[in-house]
Length: 505
Image (cartoon, rainbow, N blue to C red; front, side):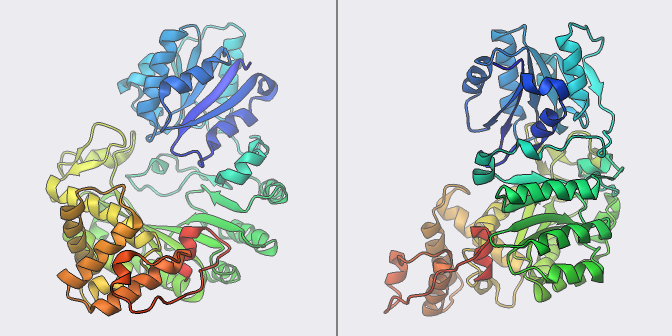
């Protein structure tokens, strides 16, 4: 039995709840009276409720995010009906802004906005001591990370075997990009470096091989970034894999030299370009030197073994499909292994809302609040772009068609060439999910050969090489009819993640 249950619904089982572990680590004397219970959004809220109430808790703390707010609302509503005496405390970015407009807030007893690492413990102590608090909504002060207990001992061996291990060396972001919640927290704070690295050593000693840094601006402080990279470089052993999010136009020589020392596939850098349209960037207060972005991406692609994951956003105020297409083509030319095409979302509290009237921005009222249309991009075009984003993830980002993809454009616009394939594919399959790899490969073969009149044997041989990239040996039926001989190829072996490894082949 636990008097305090900390819970949330993750996107997937593999996504460990980092925030809950911070709350637990800072409960002090109450930690022995608390338990973390993680679920995922595919579980029925009624079953989640059953598991929670089996603990007979006095307090249930719920982490609420854009990806789980619908399920969390249902969970809290049922909990307060079945066990009205149980105190429900909400936290997380989804309830930190515009709280008065949300049903889940109406159902709950208390809401802590902001970073609740220390505030949650204080609230629990008062509740358990029988104190009556005058306000339902409370705002947490920014915790001093030098005085905040770190949560890494709360990753158990099952987490280490089966889940992504999230870590952070800093919080906050000095930039003001209006689409991002981090723009509301300009104060960048660092975990003391020596303390942080001691915890990283403990994780390495326990067998952690995949570290995902959630810092929004990992390379803001060059000396700290370099020290962390050198720490892992000096201890590198396969299959160590590190993920960082970096400022795209900030990569000085000292940091470049350290990055070059990592073997291929050991580092993944998330480079958020978002837009190459400088007028749009100024409109949303995004400061970015595009020439330096290009230089840095070329360096990473040509001189390092880094896996580059880059981001572009569809639907920023004033950016139409032609502008987005130009930016996509420009980014393709820089050669990142992955381009994440994201649809603009109106996250609660973000300043992007100030453009709603001028640019006729229409968002879905349901999570994740994605853009539906704008003054310069109608709904039908947005739907095409939405399908483009999904199909690009299946074809372009998966690493399954690295050599086949360029056959689509061959000297023409990559964006418009791939958009043509997207329109053709949707007409035939009528969906964007639940498409088997063999089906996708066969449709790609048909489009290249029949619609674009590419040479059939060349297409077949290229798709077969790509198909083997993930270690597959059985040639699909549609390719057997094209190839007189089944050619053997060595399986791609890599010490990193399977998806990133396919790009290395």
